[in-house]
Image (cartoon, rainbow over all chains, first blue to last red):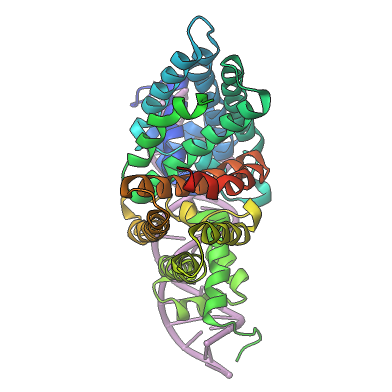
Amino acid sequence: MGRRTSVDDAELLRRLGAVFRDIGYEGATLAALAESAGLHKASLYHRFPGGKEQMAHEVLEHAGQWLDENLLAPLRDSSSSPRDRLARMARGLHSFYAGGAQDCLLNALSMGRGASNSFGPPIKRVIDAFVSTLSSVLLEAGLDRTTARLRAERAMVGLQGSLVVSRGLGTTRPFQAFLKTLPDELLRP
Amino acid sequence: MGRRTSVDDAELLRRLGAVFRDIGYEGATLAALAESAGLHKASLYHRFPGGKEQMAHEVLEHAGQWLDENLLAPLRDSSSSPRDRLARMARGLHSFYAGGAQDCLLNALSMGRGASNSFGPPIKRVIDAFVSTLSSVLLEAGLDRTTARLRAERAMVGLQGSLVVSRGLGTTRPFQAFLKTLPDELLRP
DNA sequence: GTCTATAGGAAGATAGAC
DNA sequence: GTCTATCTTCCTATAGAC
């Protein structure tokens, strides 16, 4: 073992994800990634032979798993009412995005690199999973299939948009406002 | 005059803006910017002694002016009804964002570079101008000040979010859905 | 599995001819 | 005002010791 203490895989991917999220894929230099990971560049290449691109892919997959276990699983748990589950999701989003102060990895990684953007498919999978799970809850609450789907997608739009506008205005108010009305907007008849 | 034909200032800024918008600030290399401008790197430095950062700043200012003249001025024109003006704005947004296929420069430039992000203030100015002008129209339509402001901000959230989700899903449907309901959502009692 | 050291190339920026 | 040529710095990635 070297001078630096190893972190477990989940923590490593979380730290790398924070860098990609905060400064984007192009902006995330190996120096910054290594610094955040508490490793040196060559050590990162040992763990990720595919370099930066592989790091981002594993980070995305890990974030998708985290989302599924911590936000979507509770949504699927039919032991509580749809409204309670939506309220729980809103609290989960608040916590995950640090009250609106933290950007979304999906937005950060979906930008740039034109045709060579290999992140499109995994990003789409994460969004689809979210929209689909949320849509099921709304179906369960009595909405018709079309409305449920549309509203779930609008929730994702509101989430991403409120994060962008919060960052643009330098205040978390848009994100807070979004979360506050989220369950009502989703369930209104 | 060299081998390449000069373009006027507005067209130059438009082309540079397209690069920043499509691949982000970090991703936009001088080579790509020069290629898009139809100039060589050194020529860009003659026009923009401050380099890439100055280019992005002028691009932002130019885009803000364009927005003001082509989207906000019509909103302020009280010779037509609020609803007509909002419908006109929706058409303008459709055209400006190529039906949802084109990213927003504000989102692209508001990312990354942490403390050294000098684009924060101009970005905030553009968003504020949009929200403020839209809010005035809603006031005129009879909404109270608080609701008008909140809805105008929600419109910006929907715009940015629908662009992000459209890109993420690889379809312009979210953007189209946003535009379709925009005037009604803004004016509903 | 982590480190030091470095190769090899691309990035931003400049010098100076025309 | 544009070009060719070049400088310096930084970046990605690899080699090889421990």
